[in-house]
Image (tube, rainbow, N blue to C red; front, side):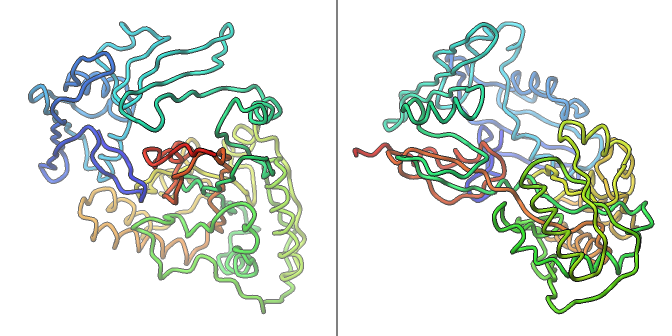
Length: 416
């Protein structure tokens, strides 16, 4: 029903109009007239009801059909980010029961015309349209590993691909987009007496030149609510002080890090800064990324954790920082607990009006800054390689990998 534009703003997609009623408990939405599925049948509220039944986030919401184009959602409690839940794709009524799984029905400009498989493995998916004069056919190919992917690129099989590494490849242009739905931070386990002192944690933050440390990996994360309309620009989450030089008597501290090259490199540079500037003894514990959830996250078995977390586009950070979420499966990994922060997170969820929400989330960000339960580092870059034959790829707010296509309507093939 809704989507995000190139600026990261929530805008209507299938929705024509909407009303928020009963102080934020009821959302009534009217869909556009004349919109159809790729098989030519109209999109109706029956499809929206079916979608709500299938999507876990909407299963606690009462969904009522007003008419063929109008639907009403009744929430059990006020939840200001509700419209963001309606960015999930709409499913056609009874699609899982009646659809051909090899040729699914869609509502977008492109429709699937071919799926190539090798046994159970999908090799490629081809979409086509008659509406886009520039790019009438779009094929997604799947490769088993990076070597096969690069071979495919060199042979001209593909025009664009994502790769973790930065390389030089003839006839391809590199676009580096930050994934702003993920941020990496150093999370302090406040249950551990070694790092329970807030002033000590502040010192550990102040001796890190974060912008320099993270330059190869991404863009600076501006706190727990980073780079959106609710980010409090007056708060400095990178208070670097190059003149600090102390010798703090404390037991060795341990940074736990996924056993991935760039994370290990960053941890080593952080270790050097803490040892040089604060006289600490720092150990680095490397953990297999596939085991970090079960061995570290579940039991909160860490002292300082270098880790990436995914967030939503809405500023709601209840799941990550409210005190009720400090035990597994909650995502408040640090165990941060503060009454003012809790209240701000609760009120931010309950208020619809953006100006008031900014006040509450400003208070929350101040509470995080004052207590330093984490040192916020960066949003990671994604390396997207595109053939030089394609133009029209511009700057945009990229929250996830799919957002690289936000300006796809502007892409053009050049005659080289």
